[in-house]
Length: 431
Image 1 (tube, rainbow, N blue to C red):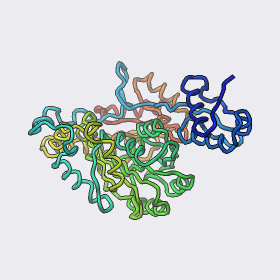
Image 2: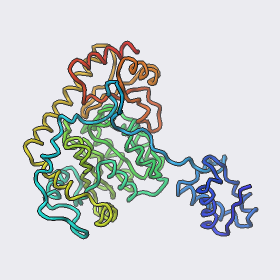
Image 3: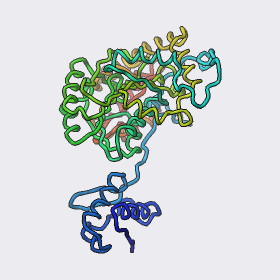
C-alpha cells in the first residue's frame, strides 16, 4: 500500500511528487479523497486540499471535481515537421521551404564579424537591432523593445515561460501549428482551441476561450499553418474588440512567414493590453537552420525574456546574427525571396485550381506553402490510399487542439510540373 505522509501542504505535495517520480504512483492513479487522507495522516482537510492544489498547479495532478484528483499523464511531444527520410513516396508532408529558393550558406557567411564576441558583450548586434526595429515598430504598440530568439517556436516557448505558470490556458487556433501545440503542452500549459475560418480566429470562439480563463492568446495573422488563412482588416478590428475586454490576457502574435508574406499585416493588439509580443522569423526566407526570430514586445516582457537570453546562458549567436544581416541586405538573398514568394503563390494556385477542376472543395489559402483539404471520409483511410499511389501527406489530426480534423495538409513547396494535376486526380480517386 502506498504511504503518503506530511504535516504541511508542502510536505504532503513533496511526498506525492516523490511517489510519482519513483514510479509508485503511475499516471492515471487516483489520490485518496481529501477527507480520507486528512484523517489518515491526522491533518486538517484544508491542508490536504492545499497540497492537492499545489500538485495541480505544478501539472502533476488533475482535479476532476466529483471524480476526485488523479495523477496526470506526462506531457508528450506529438508529430514534428520535417523530411521523411528513406521514403520512396512524393513527400508533400514535410512542411519545409524549397531549398532552391533559399540563399546559399556561403553567401550568408561572406561577411565575417570584425571581432570575437565574449561573455558580457551586448547580445544583439547594433545593425541587426536597427533592422529589427524598422521592421517591427510600425506594427507594434508604442514603446517597442526588441529581443532575438532561436526561431518562432522558441520565442513562443520562452514567452509562455516568462508570462505564464504551469496549468495556465492559452487560446490558440484550432487547427493550429503542431510545433507550437507541442511547445505549449510540454511547457505544462493548457491549450484552448479557437475556431477559425478563412479570416482567422472567429470572434465568438475567441470570446468563449477567454471567458474560460485563458491567460494568453496566440494568433497567426498571415500564412496560417496549416490552413493558409489570414486575418483581414475587419476581422482584426473584431478580435481587437474582444481582446480589449480582457486587458490582463497576454497577446502573442506569430507572424512566422515574415519575409515572404503576400498580404498586409493588420494588428490585433488592443492599446490597453499590458503584455504583448510580435514574433517574426527569418526561417522561411533565409533558411530554418539559421534559428533566428525577432521579438518585439512590451518592456516588462522584454526584461523577462532577457533574463533567459543573457550572456553565459543562451543568447543568439552573433555569427548567426551577422548571417541574418547579410541575408536581409544582399541582392542575391532578396532576389531569392522574391522568387520564393511568387513561386509559392503559383504552386498554391496551381494545386487549388486542379483540386477545383476535380470537384474537391477547399478554401483557397492566402499565404504560405500549405493547402488544407477537408475530407468527407476518414482521413487515415484516404492517406493510406494516397500512399499506395505514391503520395505522402500529413494528417489533419496532427494540428488538432480540441477537435478531430478529417483533413489533409499538403505542402506544395516541392511540387514539380504536372504533379498538382496528378495529385488531384489521385485524391479524387481515393474519395
